[in-house]
Structure formats: C-alpha cells, structure tokens
Length: 417
Image 1 (cartoon, rainbow, N blue to C red):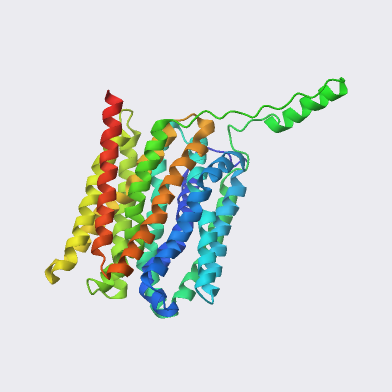
Image 2: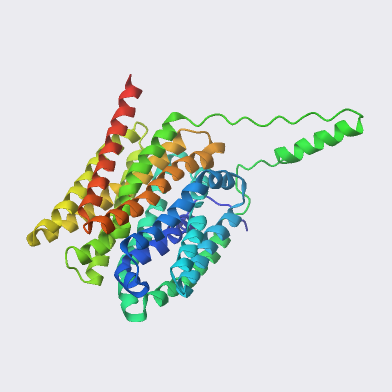
C-alpha cells in the first residue's frame, strides 16, 4: 500500500501544522508578554528583540533555505522544522535568563525559515494546478491558527501554571504532529529526477576521461538565471507589510494592556481576533488568486489600504477613553488585510517561475517577509522605550503600509505600459 496518493486531508493537516509550529513560540510569548516582562524584568525593547532575533536569523537564512528545500527530502525538512520548534520551546521553558532566551529564539528562526519553501514545494508537486492557490491560502492560515491558539490559551495557562510551564505543555503536541507528518508525506517527492544527481554525473564523466588518458575537463559553474523582477517586487511588498504585521502581532496585547487598560486575558484576545479573521481572509484571498486573471498587485494595493486603516485606529484609540473599542475593528482589519498579504506574494512568486525554482523564488520572498518581521518589533520596541508611547511606532507602521500600496500601484502601472 503506497502513501503517494493524491492530496487529501492528512496532507493538508501536515502543511497547516508545518506553518503553525514555527511561529508558535513567538505568538505565545507575545500573548503572555505582561507576564514574561514582569518575570524576567525586561524592558519593552528587550522583549521586542526576542522576535527580532528570530526573524533576523530567518531573513539571513531564507535564500539558502529555499535552495535546501529544493534538494532535501520531505522527511528531512519535517524533522528540521518540527524538531527545531520543539527544541526552541524546551530551551525557552528552561531558560535561566535573557541570554538563553535569545538563543532559543535563534533556534526558532532556523527551524521555521524552511516552512514556506518546503510547503510550497509540496503543494507544487502534489496538488493540481487549479487548486494550488486555495491550498496555499489554507496552509498559510496555519500561521494565524497558531496565533489564535496562542491568544486564546496562553494568557490563561500562563496565569494558572506560569508562562514557562505553558510553553512546555505545547512541546508534546509538536512532537505528535511530527510523527503524523512523518507517516503522511512520502519521502521521495514526485517529480524528482530518477537518475543520478548532476554532481554524481560529473564525477562519472571525469572518471571515464581519466581511464581514457584524457585530461579532465574543468567544471564550469552552473549559471543561475536571474530572479524575475516581479519576484523581487513581491519580496519588497512582503518586507513593508511584514514590518507592520509583526509589530502588531508582538505588541498588540501589551498595547491593549498598558494603553487601554485591558486585563491580561482580554489583551491576549486582541491577537486572537486578528488570527481568526486572518485564517478566513487567507483562504478568501487565496481563492481570489486562483482565478486566471487575478492580479496580485491590484490585491496588494487594496490590502495595503485596509492595513493602513488598522494603524490609524490604533493611533486614535488611546486619545479618549471612549475610543478604546477601536482596538477591535483595528484587530479585524489587521487580520483581514495585513496578515493575508503573504498569501498573495507567495502565490505570485510561485506563478512567476518554473517548478524547479519554486523553492528559490519562495526563499527570496521569504527573505523579504522575514526582514520586515525582524524590523517591526525592533522599531516599535525601540520607539516605545524612547517615547513611552505607542503612537510614534504605529505611525511608522502606517507609513510602511502606505509605501506598500504605492509600490503595488507603481508595478501595476509599469506592467500596463
């Protein structure tokens, strides 16, 4: 009985779980941020540096990881991603101080950086063309599923058990998911070359020439064609929106707790609302991208405006006690627009290249996405520590969203000309 069948629910669960486990540590620490900051006596900037470290490592490794995702077997990739997430969580739970916690975030970044190129490759190889964008949207919703779970469960678990024990509880679930993924995904991916690798073929030719008394030819380095400009444009859009999206993901609970007076559980619920809307929006936008005439940059322009509206509401909410309710529509817009951008940029990047370069193109876009993720918490945390207010940080987020909209309009207008 072979496991290499058409795509089904088990494969979908693996793809979604693969996207979910990587950022789960970051989301859980964010949801419990008041408890973590108080226990370790951190400043706001130090807390933001935790997420920044994860995404900085991921941004540095993204392009190389995309190439590895094109070469390594599926099960090897699964062990790296799930195992890296579990190890980072164990280290976090046992961390005696801030330095070890930073090391755990480095491991978390290395473990999750392969998630996008690996899952995109599996979709390209296992899923029919007409369904790929929809599958992409559903598996990308795994990131928001982890955020939803973190926002709903970790604040309460942290209050009942302590934040370290709350993190430790999840390790068992991650390992169970790894076992399920191991038995679901075939190790030999369809579409892989059946013959010897190019390097092995080169060594074989060199040996034949040596036995024939001929001087071995000097190997010429393979010349990779340049990445299409549209992929670089998607990467830039991912960086701009990623800054704002991750700044809100990390600091929204702390903002609601300090600026608006919410308790720890209600503050954590703000990211749960964003995550719940984000799951639905990623599936919806993916179905839109499934249409043959769908234009990714037109969608990006509209999503940038929705994200900008979210930032405006976050700036206005603390100005008057009667405006505290504005955080909820801001969270909805954040989930409906900013958190769904990755679906559009990933789908667009997959369309722009042949199958054998999906991992590499995804790596380029992932590098842009993680560069934005890296900058967001660092910028907002630094500005918060300097000014004592979230307003300046949300203003920077607003500018980045507007810049993404301008980029999308510029690329679309050049394409028409």
